Image 1 (cartoon, rainbow, N blue to C red):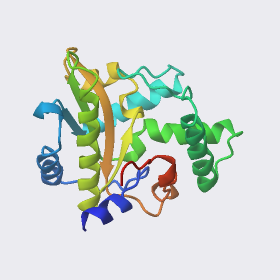
Image 2 (cartoon, rainbow, N blue to C red):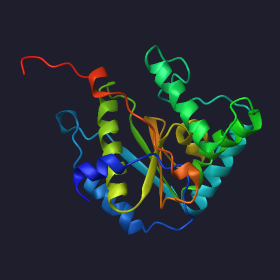
Image 3 (cartoon, rainbow, N blue to C red):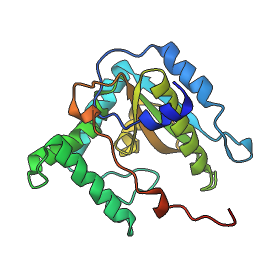
Length: 222
């Protein structure tokens, strides 16, 4: 597909088939994603790719930790519902439209918990990618991580895979380090689930909206 189509058809996929993804395809995606831009060509990103028994071990541990009521403690602080306006309203609108699409009653705590549990189960994805950087790097390097993450997700879409950037995957860094030897000198930034979308599941069908261009663009001298 061409680039515009790839961008416009990418979505956060939250349900996957159990079909294994060939290691060669993930390798190809990461090889090509290395061409992502970074500040001064520092290329600060490092990747931990996991699947198989490691995925199941991490999925189980993540689910159990979430169900035990332990608050997430990602190494990059996440605001949860403490967004300032207008961003908080956009966050709430996402929740409202997503719950409506999926038939979730926001007052039904069991339904809400089941939805969140799917996230902490990495939506059943066969492959996970954790991106981490040296903890000595400046905040600017987070922008580089964002660029390489988007490149990975666009390439996944191009090759027939789905993806979803995930806080839940990195919510409990201590659990990650039990299964994957990421040194303490590294900062775990973000995770991504990857696999073949289960398009028969409504969790894989939802597409979020975007604000109008006029809300985010001003023109000067043109």
